[in-house]
Length: 168
Image (cartoon, rainbow, N blue to C red; front, side, top):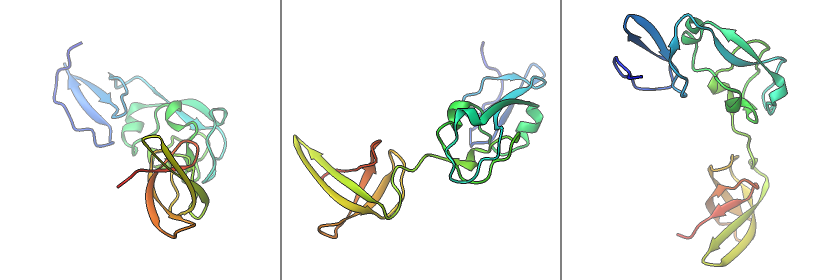
């Protein structure tokens, strides 16, 4: 199907298009175009989820909302894949849609925690321990203070909770 109409920048808000006199809504998270009268199914909590809780699939149910209601809200989580395994930033109430700003990635490294610092280059591997100066999720760059030397280095949080640093 060829798209006709004006393209819009995706800034995290829902965008609308008019195609042959029919209003279509497009989500910025890859949601397909659909007719305005069709309901939209969103995952919502089936129990109260408190800040810091890791969200499990069994804590969610699917609920239908009108597209007009969803369009009037801030950007909402539109699939279970987006929310399962994430951590709640604020209290999430049963039956209410979850704003994307209300969830964050699970922190693998906590500020003040002892972490492994790993440097690898051309077959050379150096492991030391340090104190995390920031909390971080996998893939985030954080600062760590080496316990032996007191030097502060920046590194990327790995999936196992260690911090990988690279040479200058």
